[in-house]
Length: 223
Image (cartoon, rainbow, N blue to C red; front, top):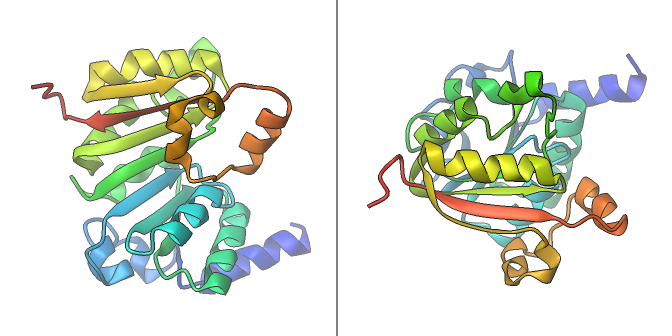
């Protein structure tokens, strides 16, 4: 393992804002984020597949009275976001190292206020469908964790994945869906606080349109 990568894993093992396997708080997080991690009752927002945590950090700077959790399975990526949060004194940021398919082991029903999915792998092959982050098996998990009328956001440059998501979300407990195929030419751009991930900036600079949607978790009740 490269020395720099090993150093980041060591950083994670001692960083107070990283929750990962082997730490005492890893097994007791479910239902206890407010009491065990943040020591407040502020709303909780997740960034799934956060990478280095650009969205997590950007939102945390602008909303100090909201708690943000960046989630990724890659420890070396999380380490960069973790160290940046610590250097800035962002006490409303945590990073959880886990695969997204296991989120239900860390969050109880209605514990989360919002979820951001930012530029996930679109998993375009038919046999990969179950790995798409807007596949029904994931949507059922999000719907349970999100409070009633909690918000789900999705940003992607991939039109096929976006169309798939537009079809699946209304069928599995999400409604009041608004969307655009070109975020930066849309009035919805005001919802994005000037935050661009590394990949978003790269796609945008290459001329790709950025697709965006948001919807509410109605838990199957559309009335």
